[in-house]
Length: 407
Ligand code: NIG
Ligand code: FE
Image 1: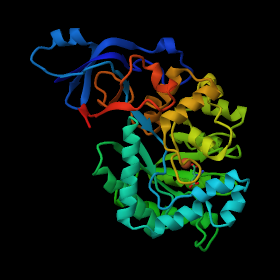
Image 2 (image 1 turned 180 degrees about the horizontal axis):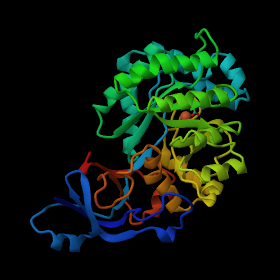
Image 3 (image 1 turned 120 degrees about the vertical axis):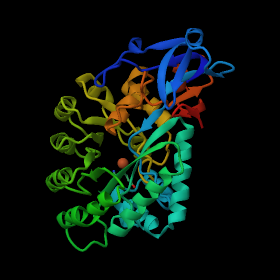
Image 4 (image 1 turned 30 degrees about the horizontal axis):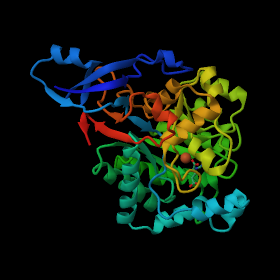
């Protein structure tokens, strides 16, 4: 066993409900605190001196100066495996071009597909690992990563194999998701329904065989896949044993309903979700995931996070880091900004980037600092945990611990 401390504050997020609104008074804040670790798990969080006297002959890792501790963050939605970049899309959008005009002039998702297909495996792995390191340095130790820029058997498998390989080179947990249903690729001969069938018959069996992902995602939107065909597809993937997540209600409403109906783990985006569907989501176990990075990247409105929480939904916040709509890749900055626009409490934001986003990934062993949970946590050099969101991402993490070890 090992005792780490003393810390000025440890915010445990213990005993907070999975769903609905939270007040900051509900936060458990332990002062002059220590964290007792048994192998890779948390044994106990409490007063440092008390833990020290209760546990003789244990290793003590002393902390000099004032630091606070939070559970490590969980980014439950990213597209960080990609080739090329879309800086020109961003510039054109800001110069007034529409999404369609940009796609027609060679930008959009299809341009990332071409860059990803032509990139070497080495190049994709190197840039993926760089992005993982950048997220870990923010205090994020669990990262979902989607395919979706390959869009044929060969290239979707290439992406997922690279994500699997990256897992052998990072201490962070990577959660791969198959997003072959991102868009029907321009070189596919057939309609949407035929492409979705191709995913079911040609891609997913291999994904299963090689154990490359146990989650499937789809982009339901006017410009991508339509609600009815998507529902049929998702039910088939469910039969194959995959967990489901959906890109829902980004520009037009209607698809979060389908996510709930098929029992998806999460419905992500929701910028355009209507009040009736907020209620529907709130009564389900499907996590509603806000992606403020996409709102900031596109200049679109934010997900109605306040309304979702008030209605009782499980709200997660993720970065959506991708080359097109969300190029920033800083979840802490994005979550802080979402909080100022949507009026979210500190407790709601912290829950949204820890145990609630972990739940969206089906991981209930992390995201709080409680007995028996994974010892992943992040420290900041400050005397008050509120400074983390107050500084909107500019207060850098001091130390990152994964499985009880400082990395
Ligand atoms: O989550 N909305 C669809 N997919 C991504 C964007 C991907 C891209 O533009 O490359 C998103 O925003
Ligand atoms: Fe996305």
